[in-house]
Image (cartoon, rainbow, N blue to C red; front, side):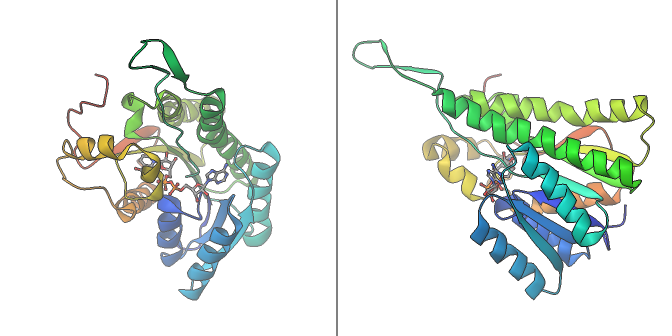
Length: 264
Ligand SMILES: NC(=O)c1ccc[n+]([C@@H]2O[C@H](COP(=O)([O-])OP(=O)(O)OC[C@H]3O[C@@H](n4cnc5c(N)ncnc54)[C@H](O)[C@@H]3O)[C@@H](O)[C@H]2O)c1
């Protein structure tokens, strides 16, 4: 697919990897739709894209709302007449072990809260499902060439202290295969589905992680540093442009080897 003149909807596009990817796509001639739940950040990113000569609109809403997700797509089509690319970058972490016993008594003094479980499932898993469903519906009905992404993580391997996050990222990593199978079954020829599973990327989401654990994990990365969001954006653009890439999830980790913080 050619990026120039395509229309790309990016949830979580007002920050982190989503912002960098949106700007890279706009610089390559795509019209971008920034969907996020932080209005001032949406305004900033849209204005920076326009300032650089790109085309962009912002849509405020939450990926956890079916109504908002439907509006993300309809506003994209109202503004730019079609939809070709959907990248669901909205994601959160709420880390913690399932139970934490008190060091003195050995009795459980803390549990991972239901809210910490449910909020991560709602944003990362349900938010991805809704974004895919709404955009695929529009692409099928519009007859436009399309590609939908699923943003997994190396956390799909089962990160200790992230039972909520890892559960969503394992599930999301399977979506491209399931979707392409369904497209075959339903004779949908115009849409591809690709997953991206990044390692540790230099964005604010990592600030919420245990910093000691993060430093320990980086020792096990062959690259020896955090991945830059631009490096993820470059992989995404390659996936868009190469029609043979379909129904799979790519790891991009800088060579993450054995980690003490990861179950094997
Ligand atoms: N940074 C990493 O190391 C890393 C690694 C692997 C996977 N990922 C995944 O990449 C994606 C983006 O991560 P990031 O590091 O750029 O995060 P980030 O926190 O920097 O950005 C996430 C964006 O999503 C938006 N968002 C959060 N909840 C939302 C909601 N309910 N509705 C709409 N927007 C919402 C935020 O406002 C923010 O703009 C996430 O799915 C994350 O799990 C990140």
